[in-house]
Image 1 (cartoon, rainbow, N blue to C red):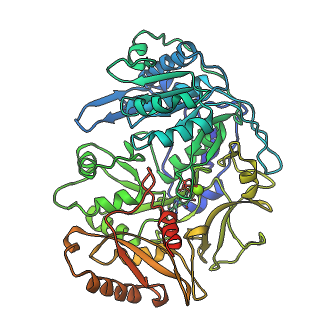
Image 2: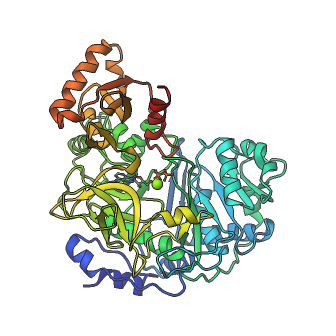
Image 3: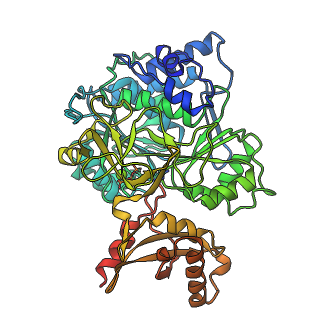
Length: 559
Ligand code: ATP
Ligand code: MG
């Protein structure tokens, strides 16, 4: 009758149930935020207790497989014990104190998850005050978790270390040399931990230290509104921004994603691929080899996977629920995925600043190309430039209501950037920076990031629609559509296209014409790309998002 109430009254032990009715889920949604909340203590440690009492299934809390087939499985008890050891290393060997920031740049190895939990146990930070919808938090230090990827360069690392003022860095063999080349320029940095089989001068060896660390550690009490973590955005439109999240905005907020959008229950095995260094063959075989039931990935991954022969070469026997987020997913890719696996892709939309904003939820009719309906955590509206709410069908700014009550799943502020923080407020709303519209049935449709909109001969064109038309053409693997200068029309649509290998040897002029004709037929003709350029690959962020602004800048600076 009141699912969220059950969850939050009893968030320590409640076993989630699937929900299948969007309307009742949204209506029944209530949240009681506890004064103190710490995910490690109030959730993970409680599951350990349940595990000990035989009150949960025997499947692991954590299951990790690497490219060589090496496996790690931890029960909740093991996860607890290892993360307490790690927490002791942070407080003792690294002499970190309340409020100090720890930067974690690791690939997807078990230590990355341990570092997350260890930081929850040790850290904490000054209170984030709220009230007027503005974020007045005074943030000094804190644990900064950067989902690490070996693709960060020393320049990226320097930027992150300097802007976060981190005191400690944890990384691996691949990135330690890069850190060492920039460490002298980071005055706050005083301890370095390496995850490695070897020792390295000036670095503490985490694996060695774990052998001797005590697993006696008392988890700190944290108020729900204390800062929990600072995340960097993807940097699709410029240097990544630091987003401050609290124990309620992320610690509790993400449980809304897990319960409703991912539709997780205790027996599920969920695989979240959100990392880079894609190896698509390994992906396919991992999905078919292990009993993964819930799969969460980015559109770029689905686009690659559907190029495989999924019917014959790979079978995903346990898979039952697939979700995608981070960029819009093309209806054509959803269609192919359904043909090849029998499953729908449940698209979700959110930002580093938020938890899930809109999603397709189990039991809801999916309208391909739509982001679904608002998550129970937010009131989502489409606004005009004066802050008035627009009716269905009209394109405007996608916004979240933040006054009189600030939603708990929203960040507190852009760290060290009050003017950027203030610029996101319009009346009682937080402006996401994305454009879209809502239809008569309450489904939200993404049009574009505000900066990506193309204005041609008085028409407003969102690149996603053109890209979705393009990918239906058999020659096209991926594309990015941007504005390009034109003496008569001001701007025209230009498509950067990555061809499927079979088409690379075709007559390019002929192909270009064919593609243009195809777009004219599949979408309103004024949207067809007047300019087409074939390229080998698209510029992307480390998280795999297309950087249209880079392509656009080139167009506009070469004239
Ligand atoms: P930066 O803010 O640094 O330029 P970013 O906005 O890409 O980078 P993230 O917070 O990782 O950083 O991404 C959030 C953005 O991703 C959203 O604002 C939106 O533009 C886009 N996005 C996420 N999910 C979807 C989706 N399902 N459909 C369309 N766009 C999406
Ligand atoms: Mg952004």
